[in-house]
Length: 298
Image (cartoon, rainbow, N blue to C red; front, side):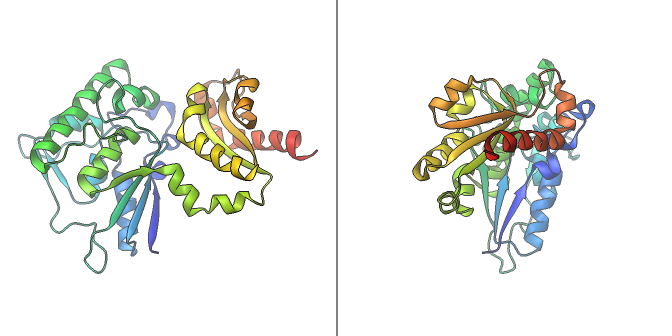
């Protein structure tokens, strides 16, 4: 159906950075915009934008720049990439013609796959909630918050769109908000889209286990959309559920009450987080082996 899946983490993700490089004032979604542009150039008629694992808090401005949008300061100079450029924006200029047109000249449909409800700004917004995870100091968080609010204000005034209070707009450091503003995107449930497109229900009917993952499997995870979505579907087919997570902080009795059979941490308790992030692939492989020995060799 000429649908492209663009994973922002492949171009703008935390996994690409060392701990020293994590700085959302500098990191940008420009590479994600390049991936979207390439997908369109290769004939995509629809783009599914997966926004997990981002290292950015730039409101999607970098991605928009890669798609031809211009963001100018009061001296008509381009603002710098990254979160540092947000509060410098004075003019927003849309590309003419749009780069998000297919070969028939029709607009490309863009859907942001997200399973968070965070707005762009405020106490539960992109900077306050996710900034520290991406290397932001308290001072950086305040600056990023001002920048995102500044961006939202100019989008409202110049484009006639209110992106500040859209549920889910804060996903991926505001990339979801930027996609709505600059790509006419819709924010949709990521887990529901993935389950439908992967035909998961049919697969589960013949499966003994379904394995899902979390960065940190904690109390919030039990009420998150991903875990609850998979659990609901697995219960229909009586398929056992396992979670492989960076860390597991929920008692076994608690998660088993909800129908999760196993939860395996990948990070050893004594390993620093920075090291665990660097070795994430190896640690995940080791956790999978432990799961197989304990539950699949019986």
